[in-house]
Length: 169
Image (cartoon, rainbow, N blue to C red; front, side, top):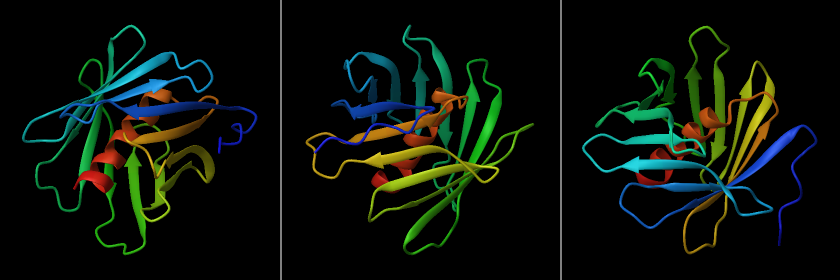
């Protein structure tokens, strides 16, 4: 059953995992299947991924701590400047709660359900990103709805962090 279209003023992307060790995701346009972004997960001691644009240029790098308690990840721009820090709440039995501090900007609040595989991101009380994971697929797949004016690359970095935390750790 297909998803309903995104709300007016939002864009939709489909993330499909590629077979490999680093948790890579091809980011596709839902109607054409054209790849518009690529999230290149790295294998190593620390969780890490590069978010690449259509031209293959690194836009953001996500880096986690090896044994971070509570879980923490940082997002840096192409120049290596840290632009955001994600932190998961330590104990939340039903809902996953995370916050992302953005220097010079409003913090992002992430809340989702592992059971429902559905996550919402709000900024200043405004819903700006919706992340939904499909349950029955051969490869992991997410649907990402992003409100106009929100940085898609940054939203993709958040999706990779959620996938790493919730699905793999």
